[in-house]
Image 1 (cartoon, rainbow, N blue to C red):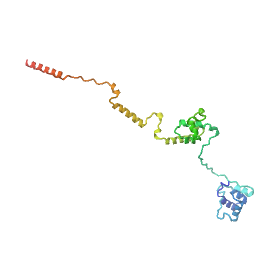
Image 2 (cartoon, rainbow, N blue to C red; image 1 turned 30 degrees about the horizontal axis):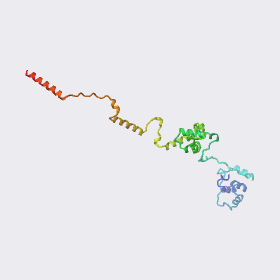
Image 3 (tube, rainbow, N blue to C red; image 1 turned 135 degrees about the vertical axis):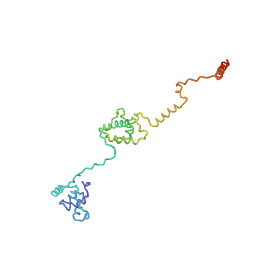
Image 4 (cartoon, rainbow, N blue to C red; image 1 turned 90 degrees about the vertical axis):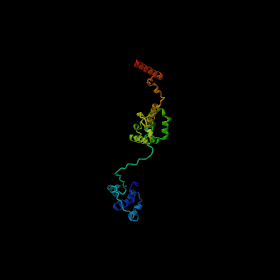
Length: 246
């Protein structure tokens, strides 16, 4: 109560000036000494402090003041906050119920097999485990490795699907570009396609390629004897001359 009260000395000044509460009641409510409250009433303490109305600040109700004025032994109760502010999330190991702690190795095995791109720190955040445990599950040296079966951590309730997707996307961004291939698609990278194309070109340009040996060759042209050709032409010419003379 004392730690949550805003401006306790200023509140005490207002209660002394505007209510009929006893010094003990005001001192208890404001976490002050009764003599200090008496000094406020006498003007010896907090002379330059302006009173703060706890009713306007929502820390005390008029009904509580009336109860205290009717009964000097009554202790004033601090009013609860009208709005609840969510507490800041603590950074640290994720708490896992005892009933689900035995499922952690199964979840680690599932993550290692289905998302090998995840780092140990990411698995630790998702499952709430330690690095030695992850290494023992990955290397199959865990004491219960024979009985482990992969299990989705989301199904086990160790993390949410949103948290898992976020860690997977983060791991995908950190991977080098050459590792971001989808092996199931069967597509070739640019380097592999260029290598295969150059291999085919080199084979087609090779004159000693065995594939050309199987191709049918064109028929060889017949060889002619020069002397026999011109000799036959000469005999034909002499025959023509004899015909003219006759």
